[in-house]
Length: 189
Image (tube, rainbow, N blue to C red; front, side, top):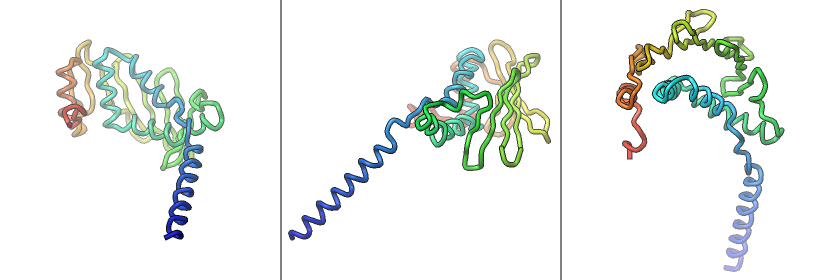
């Protein structure tokens, strides 16, 4: 019985040491989420609250926000914690993912995202004449993913890949969410 108590105390001590050690490694590593916050800051200033919400939802469907959040959590916040500087302050941003490192270069019309090893790139552009955001590759033509139709409507990708005109109102957002299969968290409870 005495040996069991000693073993139990040793196991508890080892577990406590492991927990304390791991908490020391991971404390205060939250970071500023620079990439995700920059994207969200840009989104907040592109139009009315309805346009902002539609872009936000479209970026969840296309998985832009998922990629930026993952890059922040796994790479950028750790670099910021250990180096004391945020790599998002550079003019060309480097983002490491499971698929390799991507370089993001902003300019006056949009962004170029390039895979550092393969050299494959995607271009995101805003055309002020047509009021349209597009993406393209060197091998493809520009494909629109957000078009401002008028002050009350935009066109965004639907779940089936076609463009859908959405009214910039609460009812329009609800219709887009339903079409895209996005259920608000409160309704899912």
